Image 1 (cartoon, rainbow, N blue to C red):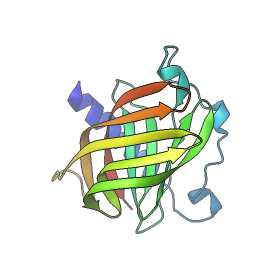
Image 2 (image 1 turned 60 degrees about the vertical axis):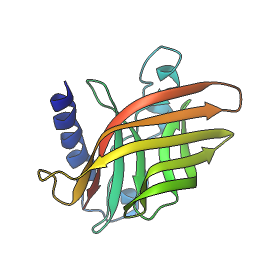
Image 3 (image 1 turned 90 degrees about the vertical axis):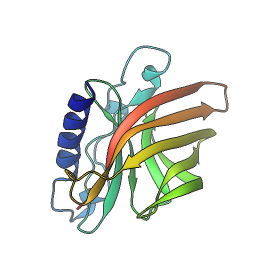
Length: 166
């Protein structure tokens, strides 16, 4: 199961990093967030949507986190040297502003980061390891994204992923 998740995740990361990294579409998604399907019908996953594929420019790195399940949808993305991260919650694309960080990894990424957006806090805790099979990146074998909204709704999402560079 874990091996399959890592293989699927790496394939998705390579697909997400594909493209020439030029032009306006390299920095913006042209996909309407509201059209992205919700990840489930339960109390938690009915609020979360997968992100579309993300492109990186040459010399840029990104943190890609996929929900830890068989189909491994991309749910969190952050560019290197960025103070924001992206998620789609309740059909709305969110630019999460980083307000807290600790445990520096490099490339402006941290093992623990806190974000806010629209009356919501999102905390990311992840474990990062170097792996000889990944050139120009690091594996994230495990992590957790916790979401707390002002209205009392909260969720904890297990994730895995990678920091990949182009």
